[in-house]
Image 1: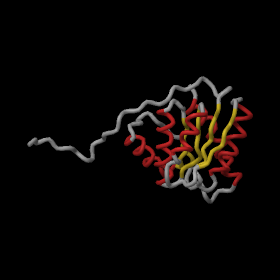
Image 2: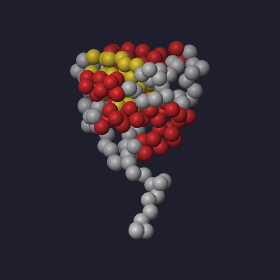
Image 3: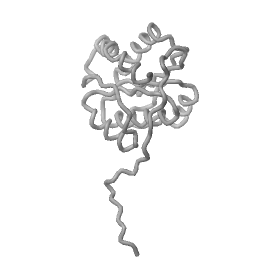
Image 4: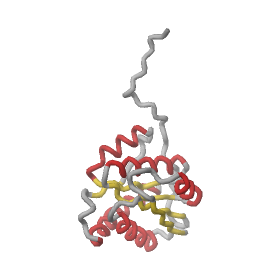
Length: 173
């Protein structure tokens, strides 16, 4: 018999590092993952336009999760990992979508894909807690004001204009 006890509140996460960042997005395949939250497609539409105008990627690929509340299905994640240089996802503006968004970011980073996860300001603590629980202490998100859902298409696209440079900085050196 041993007197060793395990603390169930202690972190058992294996430390993770972020992926190596390219110097620019020129010639890269960029995947934009729509997490199926309302208005996320408006933000991605504008980010895609800005990327095409300013970054000269080889391709911009759009993918969509079936639901925001769960991680993307394995086949979708494998598809993204197999064909992507960098990735980004639109605002997570609920606790389930925030935790799944950070999980995706960690997974893609583990596979060498620099990722920018965009969250709304209400969920900064939840995103940080999820990243820490996953051992991704260096993983940082891009934050937009909360709430997103009552905004018009034009207002959401204006948010994309405001965070575009930060999104690019998150996935490049």
